[in-house]
Image (cartoon, rainbow, N blue to C red; front, side, top):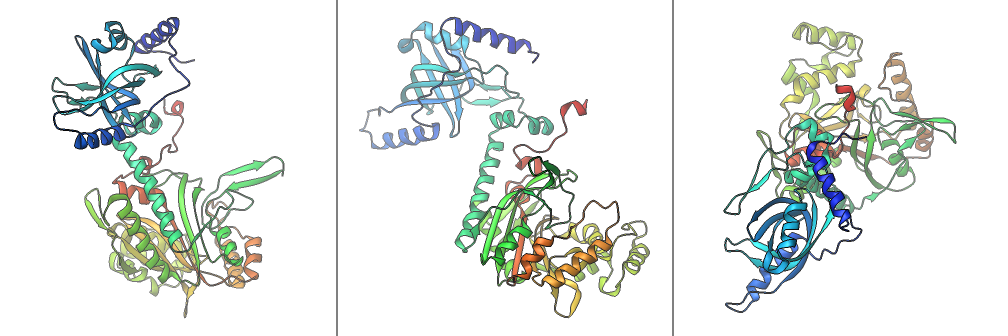
Length: 513
């Protein structure tokens, strides 16, 4: 059972008093006719069309949360907030009677939801206001909001005190965060615009949106540790998907030439400013395209989304001004690593030789000596090159042994046609010219299984059914994956993935004590 504070006990007592008087503190129905934004627009339009020296009569029933309130003798003012913003209410004893105005002042608290009906007017200070003729409680707030400190000054301006700023509390109580911080609500409105823009772009380019299984008998499409569950009826373990890739590419076999999915992936891994175990992914696959064509499509899509969300392809992100306008910079991985680390990876064909080169040049700043050559190259990328990739950049041509689903570059079997898009020093997206040779694919799965250590958690298992699908014939194609949460971070100027997830993964509160 909850332990109530003194303020909560006072509000609970008010609920008892209201119910004793026959007042329903949580009525079933509301009769709102306008949002605050709608009625302000309607009133302003009526003012423009009104006869000189005559006030328009615009009636409305509004509803919202009380964010500020003050009593001034025979009148009272309040500000309520709804999805459209804030609007002022005006209560006067002439219309309501002293008893009703006193009732409002005594029984309604900040945070309560109220419905008010009346006529719109403009105050002497110019604020559009509802002159209340009737009102009722819609929902009584028992717990005061954490930032319930809006104070209205004598001139009518509202000053906010003690805003809810603690990042941990905001993430744990997102409902309170949204209630008191309008800019947080705006973040998630922008995120919704982003997802809509991505869908619109792909739909307009003849892609078909599909849905693939979240519960899978075999995970694949990435190297990641999965979440494991059990299906009781089938009596078998199942995995929450770590990628959509292998299912989407099965659809190419079925002559669905352009497919995409926006949905949740799950990876049982660490949590950081750019990682959450549950995240939103966009993947698409395009028959008869290669990674160069996917590059062009990607930069156009992201620029389109940026303009829809922010109104521009130039976006502020912390200290950076990011320009998403195509074409993006292109950097070949070998050249980029050589420039930033001083090591030419092409000169070291084995993991042992590459490790010695890294150790000789960078001392103790080395990867695990048991790593594959590909993982050592990935180490060089993360340590030296990645932090320099601030403006939108395509890094391309990756080692084959960390890209098991990509086609090799003609004449270079150790390098594949793969790119990753980097912005502000972190990876945004990943794409391949997809491997469609079933015999080559099977051999790569087998080679990878030999490289895994017994205790390695990030394995890419061999999927026999996927190989069977490939043997029916898969068209040449380009594939793409992007973390939608990371793009949302960039377009809303947020530097933690928590800020763009309504309910991020957090430790239970008792574990923090």
